[in-house]
Length: 107
Image (cartoon, rainbow, N blue to C red):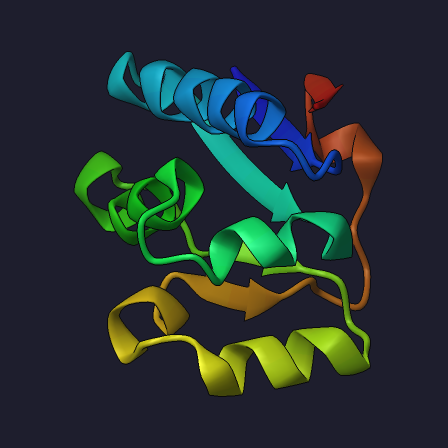
């Protein structure tokens, strides 16, 4: 199953649950793409937050880098995070076809 999981709410619990679901589904062979919206950037910038650590481990789960919205905040963010975290982030492609995903979940 191919899923898009969007993390949009700037709370530790919501971002943790969404990211934990993504990692669990990836463990069982599902194709999962994470999308991190601007409100969660504050959590991502905190080295001790769960989201920060989980995003660092995307490669271990054979997941692609998480998408960031293409705006001024995304460019600033990728320049500010440590390189091991930055390698797990990329700007969202210009064209995203929602039909490519069997499920789109938002947290």
